Length: 415
Image (tube, rainbow, N blue to C red; front, side, top):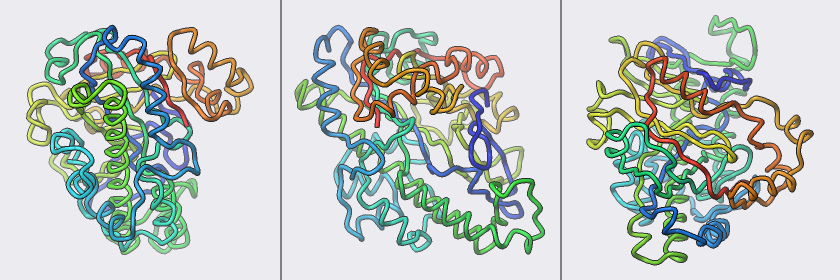
């Protein structure tokens, strides 16, 4: 992928397929933040209509959404509730907890639930780390941004997604938090001592893997599915919190107009049909980008245009909405990049600018910033990322996905 950069095991921005029955599954090919993904909400109000309420709305979102590495989530889960979330994903949050509606599920990849999840495969340590984090943003490159649809390039695609120029949107980027990290850690520790016995030779121990049909492989896939379900549930709660913040600041009518465009997963391994074969597609720092040729696997709204694909840039530049093209099937296993991709390390970014200075620059550019950590803000400076406009141009020229609309940030919440 054009956003490729260094990561544990596979580089971030990598796609690989292994035979679903006879191949291997690699935790390092999925990543630690299992199902880190992006959800786009259309708020139904224009930038002019929102006016000076941007600041109060960002304040309310910041109060409603826990951020950082150690803070708890918006929903405290008992053991049975956590089991349901791990097994069923977003449907458990919508139908059992009443946070969201059926339209949200219809506009979430895989309906917000990965099959094969078995909570028994998730360690107690992973459960402990996740139980208090449902509905939290996290830290690092996770964010929640208010953005304006700055420009529409594909009117038909934008119409199908319900996006119009000048409309305010909310882009949510978060994942499975500590639970997913622990699932990956547990799996790597189990697989590493057994690799030689399976006859597998690796150039790097970070590529630890297991035959997909082995007990260790099946256990990881079952636990990974649980972490993926937790991540979709996490973004479902975060979306509900955004709706509630809109309600408190703009009123009931405005909250009723908040609509989910789509939710896409990154960092996941999914069984799919490609080239007439059943394969396990590892997408690390990459997102599914099905074209109209796979309309049967997409919401009816997108059957004619292809799946929505979201490519965030940086908090000071912009993000893109694209739609999957059928040409990506052969070129990239129907996958697109998941963002602009880092250009420099977090340490290098901190050495170049301080968090307070960056905040002043962003606010001078009309972006309301809410961030508890000046250090964390500096690590995500716009110059630390590749040019998102060039990245999506590569994706489009390669025939993987077509540009639909560009989004410009007006408010940023960081961990």
